[in-house]
Image 1 (cartoon, rainbow, N blue to C red):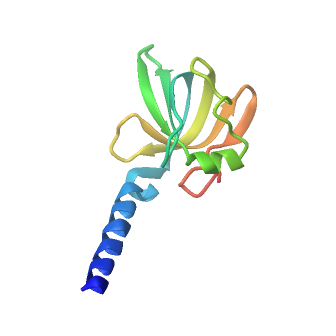
Image 2 (cartoon, rainbow, N blue to C red):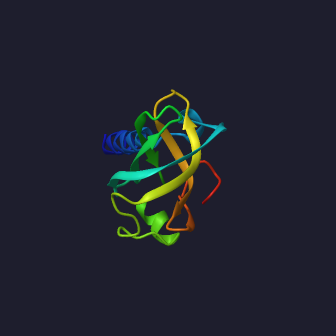
Length: 128
């Protein structure tokens, strides 16, 4: 009985952790690269991914807010990032892959910040 409960509990924990982390190819399309430039409007330095939000102006002058997914905080710290490396209002350029669902969501590979290009800890396999 105890063994059955333990197996069930381990399976539940594994299933919830797998669900919490998505597969890059399921959500993003590496065949659709994009470069966005704009001021940072929000920074969420949390697990499992850091998210940035940028206001980006298109060719017609319309501004849209884009969500930028980066790696997890530990990966980014190992790549040289700190919580204070980027502030709301900083103008940055992001290279990454578009979301498959057509939303304003990008998985970042690199971020150009104050003239310095930094890897974004992408789960897409490049820029790690």
